[in-house]
Image 1 (tube, rainbow, N blue to C red):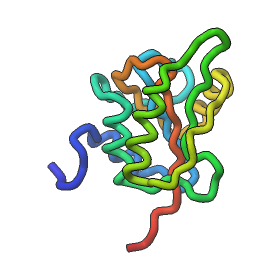
Image 2 (cartoon, rainbow, N blue to C red):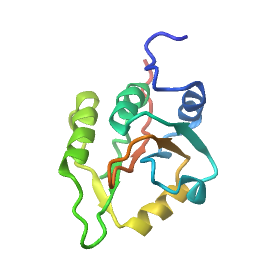
Image 3 (tube, helix red, strand yellow):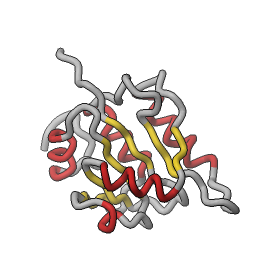
Length: 144
């Protein structure tokens, strides 16, 4: 065990997060997301919600400050209504760590899938929230 690392961050996940460079993106996917279809690097986090993953991951790296949208979510398909509590729960966790983060950019479903193909990895959560997928972009880690 290591100190200061959330137990939701598995050794495999920690390795993936460490190997990401600045500007790389990671998808925190809900349980319904076709992760294996869109990315070759999959980390399983079954039974863990995306807010809990965000709370465990965000203390480990900074969000990209050089882009307009370091956080991206999937736009609801026409006729669907996403639950606003999902985005609110993510924003609350994100703002706890990075209070000046812009609101998540919403991206059309298939554009989001394409973005997931380009992501460094996909973490498959156990979250069942509809439109719960989120992409976060890693920033430059400051020297301490």
